[in-house]
Image (tube, rainbow, N blue to C red; front, side, top):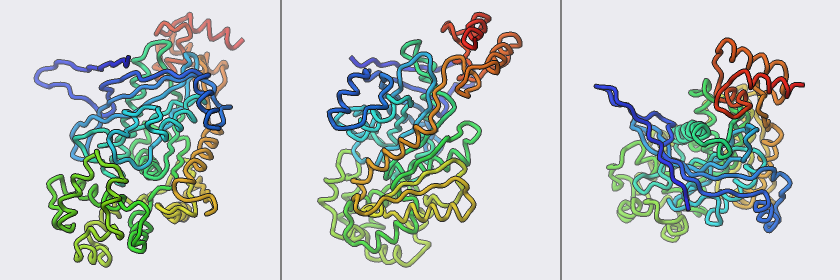
Length: 459
């Protein structure tokens, strides 16, 4: 039976009533435990490499607080899977999923199951190798009362930052053998819309949350980073688009986000589409459902004069919002690895090429670009190739820290003893990670006994 825990954080302080903060954990639900043997059996059955399966894993879905575009507290959701080890601390890996439109496909709802192969395979490729895998649903996905602001940068950053905070809170709440511990490493990775979300979140973290999070490496893959350039040119030059529902997904999201939910679609779309689009994007219709209804040229849903303006006027509403959400106006500081397929039939590879060239020109120091040949296939076919290569890079960076390693250098030494002794004798403040690493006797307290145990480890 699924275990459900509600986290109630409240206090009475007249005349002020305490409000939740972004990142506060609201609810956590245990979904499943997977043993090493179970994971190996499944991976072997699909012909996948199981050599990196080192840990059994636990899976939880969570709800957490965030702030929406109007500054109002909102509740979001996501999925967390972590390696089960009481004596080791692991990196955080944030996986941003690809384009979703059905609420029922949210990672927190499907979990790691055959109902969502993307989440299942990514979870099994990462968590058993010693990574705490965090998968935000995104704003609006899995919530029937909200729309998803598709290809809009800021909501991705907020959703990711706050699920990372909630994950850290969960690690404190879960007790002993059911708990987990994170170290100082953080990886970001995602494909398609997840690639966009990854780069958007990287920008947001580096510009606004650098004092709270340091990104070890970011791996954006096959994302539409150059919305106002490459993607607009592609939409205008390709009357037959292989996934036509992407076009109204972008347009409706931008209208709702910037103009409000009461925006008059009749000012932008042909009458049929003005009436139909809000229904189609209510979270209960699949991309295939929408594709069947779409005209051969997806831009034909626009009123003729709106289309002409979009084609010719750089100050048109859609041009302006796409420009605001193009991800080229900064210089990445973290190691960044772009992956894309030259034969991508949905998100042209020029998105990655333009981003790479722009960042290098602007002075970025650690930017890498891998382009896979056309022969390997299109957008869907290259996805597992990109992700596999990305996971290999992450494992090259990965550090796993044992209890006692207070300075996080993967070595237990006199330096760690100095930190612990100072904490015990002088009451020096420890970080959450250091407190975990110093509690060698698992009594939720740092004392002389921990010092003696650490001395034994050094000897």
